[in-house]
Length: 207
Image 1 (cartoon, rainbow, N blue to C red):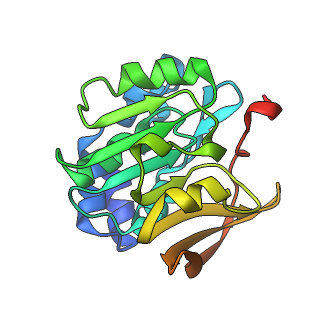
Image 2 (cartoon, rainbow, N blue to C red):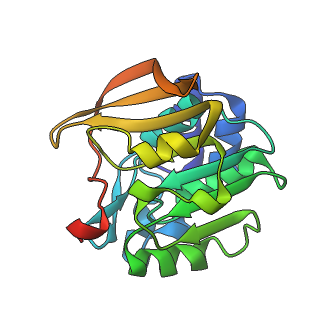
């Protein structure tokens, strides 16, 4: 599949035009290894080293849609991996948006910092994602790009009131992508889409 075919496929699934435009503007081949570049626009996850993957474009589009992104938002991605999703978010939120990534694997942090160096509103930190990024909070949107059985408490605290958090919730075999809204300090499920498989959210003690 080439880039135009991928964009056409996403358009047929009725994703918003701002999401399609972000995929059009960000070169996925810049976030994968040289040996994988011929597969850059296949609608499939690809390995990025350290037992991690760059997610399937369709899956990413679902997550971005659930986030309900707007211009100028303050956004956190936990498990930012290659940095690809961060750059898509930065395109949607615009230059006045702030996009922060947390990645626990140092090698991926270095690679993703290099891949995102031309995106001035993107910052990536080598931290334990379960603890969030308190000094840059509160966030209007938080995306957890790794599976977890529940949303870490610190992330709930760092989400702004009426903010949205999206995460794959479930066991190692299958997860539901769930969007939550923070209402009166508590998370309320807004939407649930079943049938996804993500790598696990790793804490410092699990490395």
